[in-house]
Image (cartoon, rainbow, N blue to C red; front, side, top):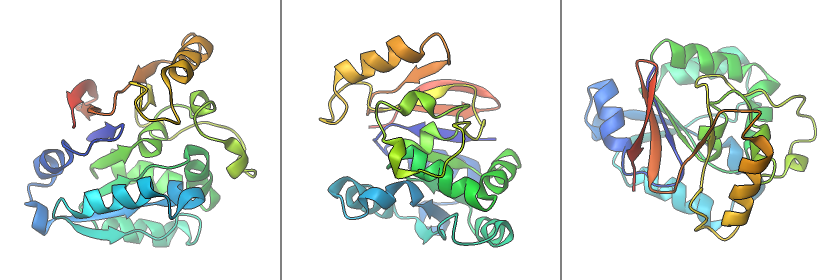
Length: 210
């Protein structure tokens, strides 16, 4: 079950995907799930992330919004790609979309069966046991129908991205608030924007991803 959980930088993506698909970038079909970006669809950071991944040379296949198709159709879409990339945005919106029609269970099943998973920001957070610690970062009001905050449970830690405080919406004071509030309740992994959490054979380690 290989996972690469990023804060912002994509430097580790190409080698990770190549290692776990045995394909060159040009021959790799990378499924791109952008549900987390819905509240900010035209925001510069959303456009920049999409262009950055497209620039890596993969055959990028935009996956259907997880709440727009039934679980079987979503499963078929994942069967057509060699790896999946879950993009950033609002993690509450992302989790709500995945849960709406069972895409969360499908995604977990496929990843546990070996589909390489790359998450960035919200896509990294949702892979963990809970998204609750991200409440100070992302507004849950964008997902009013979401019941509960349990994540996908693919990893045992909650990734807290942007932990260097360099992005204006996430100053160091906010990162410190998350640590104070949630450090005793959840295992937290604070990732700076040039780092990622690589999980191979069940063992997580922090790697460079500028």
